[in-house]
Amino acid sequence: MARYHNKEFTKKVGAKVKKEREHAKLEIEDISEMTGFHRNVIISIENGTNTDISHIAEIALALKIHPKELLNVDVVIKPRFKLSAVRHEKSRITTRILELCGGGFFNTWRASKEVQIELAERFPNLKISTKNISVILSRLNNNGKLEVSKRSNSRYNYYKKTKKS
View: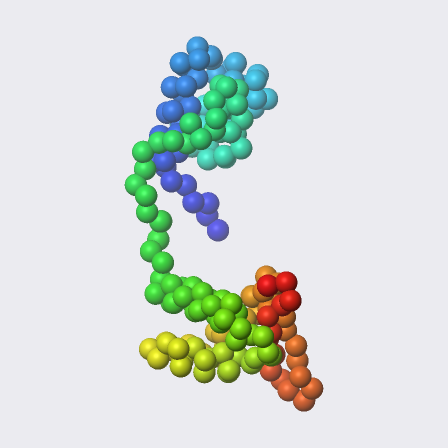
């Protein structure tokens, strides 16, 4: 998988690093010695080609400024990609299932089908498969919000609110 690189942002950060270094009347070699980084690392940051946040943070400390000062550049605030309708709906389903947890629905053992029926009653326009509900319930189990059990002679998982939730 190719690394994501926001060239506009890293160029702005690099320019800010260079400006702050020059304001402190330090040479690249000075920062190199103070951080232990090769001078080429500092050059690549100032050129906007190095995106390693730990390097930028160490340079900020060498410049005796908080790292957020170097990252405080003008940017357009928007995600790289729009959230898909499917992912958005799944997030809403998770939130709704968590509401069921808080409302006592999971005080007794529940199967995915029961959750699907309850959600359909509360949200009539909601269309979700038991398979997708099972995935969310499993994730909530992994996160410690629900416990899971298999009943004898049943291939289905049953979920109940954990005592610590």
